[in-house]
Image (cartoon, rainbow, N blue to C red):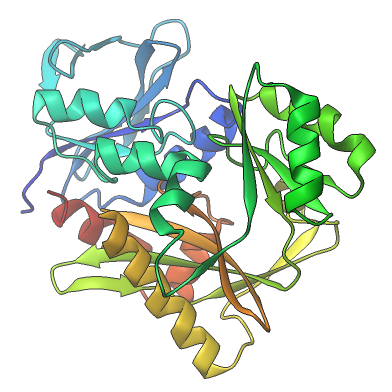
Amino acid sequence: MGKFKKIAVIYGSDSSEWEVSCRSGEFTASRIDGTEYDVYEIFARFGKWSLVAMKKRDAMRIPFPEGSRPEIDKTDFSVKVLGEKVKFDYAYIMQHGTPGESGQLQGYLEMLGIPFSSCSSFVSTVAFDKYACKSYLRNVDFVRCAPDVFVRNGMDLDAVAAKVDSTLRYPVFVKPTDGGSSFGITKVKSPENLVEAIRFAFSEGPTVIIEQGIAGRELTCAAYADAEGVKALPVIEIVTENDYFDYDAKYNGHSSEVCPAEIDDSLRDLVQQTSCRIYSHLGCSGVVRIDYISNEEGLHFLEVNTIPGMTSASLVPKMVRTAGLDITDFLTEIIENSK
C-alpha cells in the first residue's frame, strides 16, 4: 500500500485549454493504479468544483451525470458522496492553464497541507509566465534564450514596435506570457502585422512576449524525479506541416512526433542533460516537459510545461512508452515521490 489512499484528479480550467485539460485528466485517472488507490475525478472551472466520477480500489468506475454531481467542499478538500464524507489525501493536478498551472491551485493545496503531483506554487508561477521563466534561465551557461521584448497591456504599441524593429529580426513570435496549447500565438513575418498580433495575444492575458524566431529542429524532452533523483525521458522531434507547431498542428494531425528523435547521440544527451539541469535549477517537482530549438548555434530554450498534456496521443505518454515504462507504474512513481 502506498502513502496515499484517496487520489483526486483535478481537470478542467479557467483558460482556453479547459477541454484539452479534461482529456488529459480523464486519461490520467484511467491509468492510475486502481488496485492501490481510490480515484476521484473532479471537474473544476471558474470556482465550481464537482465530482465527475469515482472508482474505489478494485471496483468499477461510477460516473455522475451532469446536473447531479456532488460538489467539492473546498474548506477541507472533501466531498459527500453516496452517504459518505470522503476527504482526499492527494491531488493529481491536470489543469492546463489557470489556476492549475499558474500556482493558484498549488497554493490552495499547500495551505491545506495536501500533497500534489506538480511543482510548488512558487515554481509553477515562475514557470507559467514565459518571460519570468526565461529571466531565471537567461544567464545560465547550459542553454541559450532567444532575444525578446516584453509588453504589458496599456503600453505604447508604436514604441514597442519601434523597439522590436531595432532589437529583433523578423520573423518574430508574439505570445501571451501565460498561455498554452498555442492559444494567442502569431508568427509575424513583417512589421506591419506586429501590432495586430500583439492585440490578439492580449485576448489571452495582460502580458505578451515578442520573441525572435529561431530556425532549427524543434525538440522536446520531459524530466521527472523518482526516489533515485532527476531523470529524463526520451527526446521527441516535432515535425509539422504548418508554418510552426500551432494548435492545428498539435491537435488536428498536422504534425508528426518522432520518438525517439532521430538525432545524434551527443545531441540527445545534451537535451536530456539540459532538461534535468533546468528541472533542478527551477526547483521543479513531478513531471515537466521542456521545449527547445536546436541549430548550429546550440540549444535554445523555448518554454517549460509544468502540467504537460497526458492523453494517449500526448508527448509525455509517448516518451514513457518509448522508454519501455508502464504508464501506470510511471504515475505511481510520480504520486509516491511527491513531497
